[in-house]
Length: 113
Image 1 (cartoon, one colour):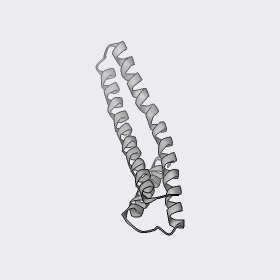
Image 2 (cartoon, one colour):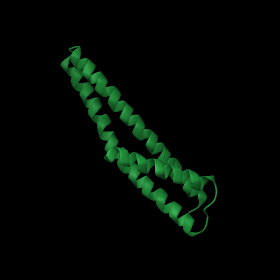
Image 3 (cartoon, rainbow, N blue to C red):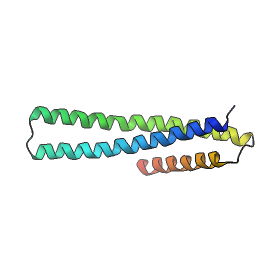
Image 4 (tube, helix red, strand yellow):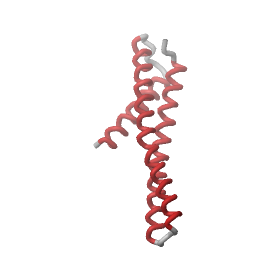
C-alpha cells in the first residue's frame, strides 16, 4: 500500500540521485581539465597516470548513477500510480513527485539524444 510518506521518500531519492549525477558530471569535467593541464605542463608520468585513474573512476560513476536513477524513477512512478488508483491525487507531495518525474525524464531525453 503506497502512502504519501512513501511518495515523499521516493521523490527525495530521485532528487538526491539527480544531484549526484550532476555532481559526477561536473567532477568529470574538472578532472578532465586537470588531466589536460598536467599533460601540457609535462607532469611526472606517475602523477599523470594517477590523475587518469581518478578521471576513469569518475567516469565510471555516471552510468552507475543513471542505473540507480532509472530504478528510483520506476519506483516513484509505481508509487504515484498506486496512489492515483486509490484516489489520493491531492497535495504538494503529488505535485512534487510529478515535477521530479518530468525533470528526470527530460534529463534522460537530453542525454540520450
